[in-house]
Length: 67
Image 1: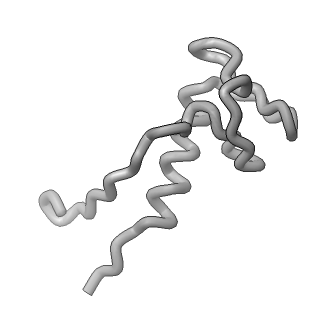
Image 2: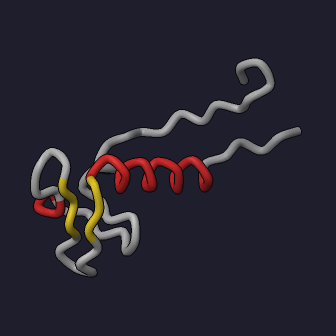
């Protein structure tokens, strides 16, 4: 915790090649440095925004229990 703000460490591995909509993870989902397109559900988005959504989702699931 830093100044009252909980910090959750997230492994960023595969966040840029995993679809933030359906969860499909494949290297070919990442067409270029900035372009993401899921081969399964056809979701398209800027690759960094897609990765940020995946990190946010992982952080929400892995939140520590406050006592």
